[in-house]
Length: 352
Image (cartoon, rainbow, N blue to C red):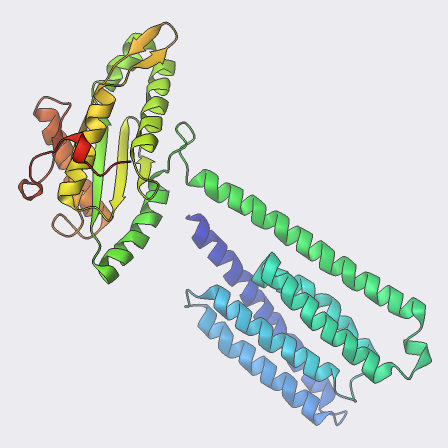
């Protein structure tokens, strides 16, 4: 499962659980408050339960889980503050303020969760002092000290837990998107970036091209010099790609000696120029391994977004077909469509 989707599913599950708890608790308290003639309070709780029930239906289908988490928290916390401000609500109800940090951090993350927690807990504390400031028993130093320490402890632990979880999740997401040997992006990362570049191309009409690169006779390197030599070659090739391509270009290793490069703002002719420059750069590159100097070449297939396809799978297939045509032409060459024209000299290629 994609890390982003896993995070979405986690938030959705937490929100659904909170909605069910809100519905159940609101209806229970409403049932208790109606007989006690706390009519307005009871109706506020019924309205909150109805809102949570409606949101439960929406959350099952929406992809904007984070936005609905924020809406739910704003309604829930505002209703809580409104209820705490009612004269018929006792001082014991203020214990619910301690739950705010836990819910806020679980649903909104460490930054927004902290902001909402501090804001609403401060408002709740101010309401408590306003309502019960004239009662010496309820504003004794030890009572207020216990309340403040408990609130800060709950807030601190909630923030620490969520911050630690987010860092671990970010680390795992990065690891899941990177090839461990070369440090380049993997296919999953390429899919993500392509979707964004595809949206840009559709909206702004910017060109987009894909290169598929395959090191020629790479198996011979492994057979003659060992797999460590093969790894050294892959790392050196990845380094060369980083040096020759722009920071805005995405380089990915898709298995073995096969690489894909996504070139934004680059049409087919420009992609041919880039590919030819890369081919010549590798041809001239001497890779030192122990006491040996290794030389190799690359064959490249080029596909352009639009003329050759509108999705990554189609572009990859077309680029792969042209890559094999380059292999059939004797290796160490670039193959694109006739409309792209002949490869130009590296000096005029769009590389940095």
